[in-house]
Amino acid sequence: FFRHAYMAERPPMRWWGITPPASVQPPSPEEIQENRRFVTALHAFNLFPTPKDIEAQDQALQQVRDLTAQWLREHAGNKQKTAERAAKAGTLALQGSKQLGSVMPGDDVDLVLVAARHVSRADFFRGFPRVLRAHPDVTELRAFPEAGVPLVQFALAGVSFDLKFCGIDKSEIDPAKFDPTKSSHLRKIEDDACMKSLLGTMIGHSLLKAVPNANTFQTVLRVVKAWAKRRCIYGKVYGYLGGLAWAVLTARVCQLYPSALPAMVLRNFFKVWAVWPYPTPVL
Image (cartoon, rainbow, N blue to C red; front, side):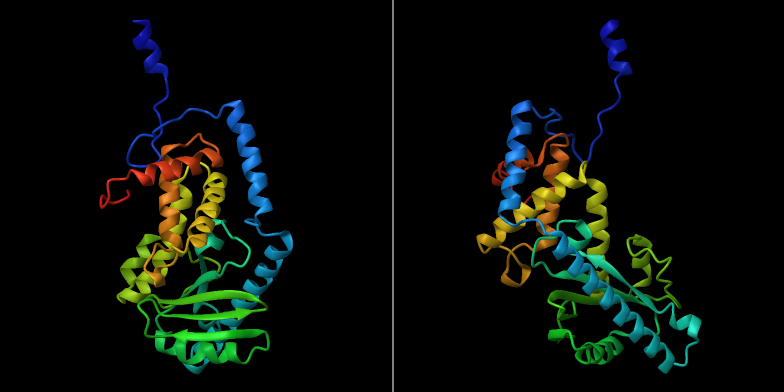
């Protein structure tokens, strides 16, 4: 009787994924000390941006926001749109390490320009690179309009950017109200490349909601990415996993060990994926 009464009062264990956790064991005093040494070592290996790095990146990002807003207004004016409609022609959404909070020194900033129906991809690739080319602080400008996921790459004030485009079948997109993470937007996208472009933002948002501790996830993801890059197994263009795929693998291990500190999650990361029964999908 007492056993059943105790079990009835216990709160149900939360599942962070589609399976129960592998362990909910809290960290031991030894593991806490080990994790402190681990995080100190990560800073020594320059895996965290300095406040100066973050400030420079944020300033460059704001300049890109201003440039896209300026171009959208000019384009809307050429289409005889009203000033009010021109101000609601589109907005920028974050992706990648900047969105996930796992930026490392030298990382690109991944963005997608989400635009209303009167802005086409052809308009974007004809017009926006010209705006960038005229800016004195823009370098390394390259456009790839025929890629599987079309994008414009450039550096502004020393910060590198990858900018994609997504057109949505909406008459207007208010930057102050538009939420790019809502899956309902996908019903208003007919173009496959546009859908792929916006999915990066949606998946990143879902990953942050799916992990038990965002700080642990971000710390471990930095190390995983640094490890993969050091061993030259990072990047879709080279036939390996890209940043989002590594983030999914990291998030899954965080779900399996929700109480673990970053050093323990990293150790379990390699244990889990070393014995994973490939090609079973990671869910």
